[in-house]
Image (cartoon, rainbow, N blue to C red; front, side):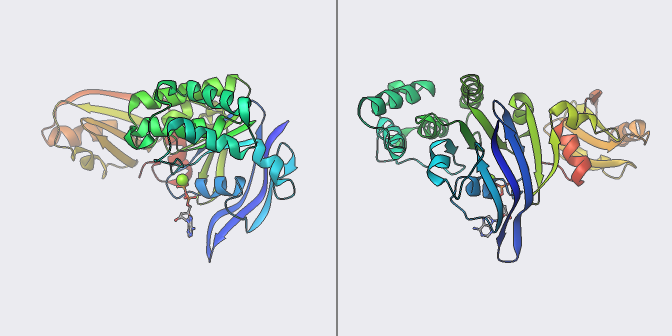
Length: 311
Ligand SMILES: Nc1ncnc2c1ncn2[C@@H]1O[C@H](COP(=O)(O)OP(=O)(O)O)[C@@H](O)[C@H]1O
Ligand SMILES: [Mg+2]
């Protein structure tokens, strides 16, 4: 069964086309990755799926029912974890979850049970009586997730749930995504972090300028890359600008430096490794290690768009 079907979806803001004739199918049981740089149109798409925004044109079906024609059905089967936190700071964690679950018609014992269950699921049971204003970013995110899952939707869409949180909460969230999926939920996981998407998603769509430019399992996507090599150079000591030295080398497409590690994407066909190392050595840089790496989703994105996902 298709949990989500999008056909020819378009959203214009004035003359600007944020989502451009997008079509997409997500099947039951998937953890589907929606990967794209900032501004690609991910949140706009999600806001249309959750009926917060009206499409300019196109169709959206949830569990094979049109969301415009059967809006209540769509709402009951959908859980959205929005990019911008949607929690009330002046209500306790328990009251927040209970409030959102109540919007889906849960009442009495059942409401209490589901609220407790959702808080337990995100590891906030012991904070039930606390106010989120004193929570860390990661705890607020987890509360946001609890609010979206208490009514047990079939499809959960998470919009960049790990932006700006500590690594521990990030791992907690990734683990909860897997657990929710094992319990029968279909998940759409939106991110601009390709490592996360690679780690947890069974299928991935890469979005750019409102269009899906590639779709498949990570193996399928990577197998399309034959013309780029990905080289990692580790230096002993750095100023942080050494990567610049490599940009003029023939064949080099992009250079990324984080501390003492430089990542170079280059045309696979150009034999330029010696040239790169010479550039660094001539400038008096000491090289600790050099290795060629497997292509990743970043290489896929680069090959398709000529840009880095992170830039
Ligand atoms: N309400 C709006 N009015 C005008 N432009 C918008 C509006 N919402 C989003 N956009 C633009 O649409 C593009 C896609 O935005 P968004 O869907 O938020 O991207 P993403 O979630 O992938 O980072 C961006 O260029 C953004 O500036
Ligand atoms: Mg967004």
